[in-house]
Length: 190
Image 1 (cartoon, one colour):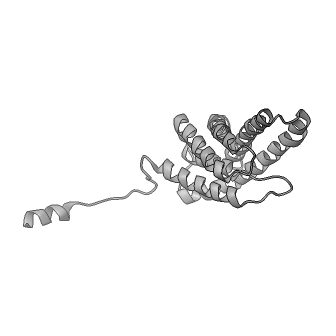
Image 2 (image 1 turned 90 degrees about the vertical axis):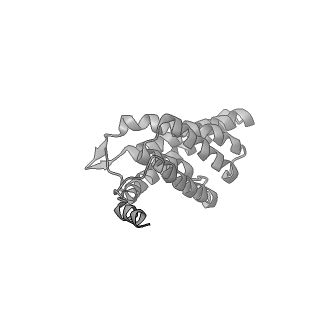
Image 3 (image 1 turned 120 degrees about the vertical axis):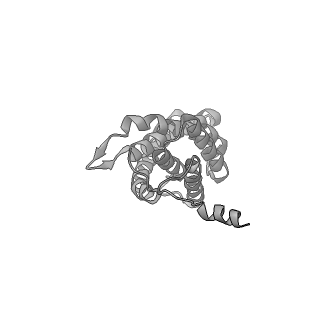
């Protein structure tokens, strides 16, 4: 009994700051995707535009945790699956194709823009948010055009400009949320 008490007294546990473990990326991504799903569900259309919070949130997650390409595809599939029940679209299942494409665009574009900054402010979050939204949105509206036989004029002059406008809004949102999220997660720049 005495020997067991001595062994227990000698054991110490130490914690190091900023050590989230192997699966920290899962927790961060799940939290951001949950926030994106809630915001996607409750955000109304503004002048015919609906912000796609899910894309902004997975771009934020990808910028923060830098997952592998396999993980990025998983993030895109989960985002697409979460968008299906919250979608305001005629074909919500198109999200299962468009969101993985958006997530892959973010991950593939990120290394190209990761060193761009203005006065120490990284521009990658805003740029990846914009281009990912455009890639996802272009895929989504193209699927709508093909499946619903939407006329070319509506597609070119009605739908694609909306994709660009939502892309710009998502770029701004992702950029604005990046620094506070990074600070909250105590992530240091590489």
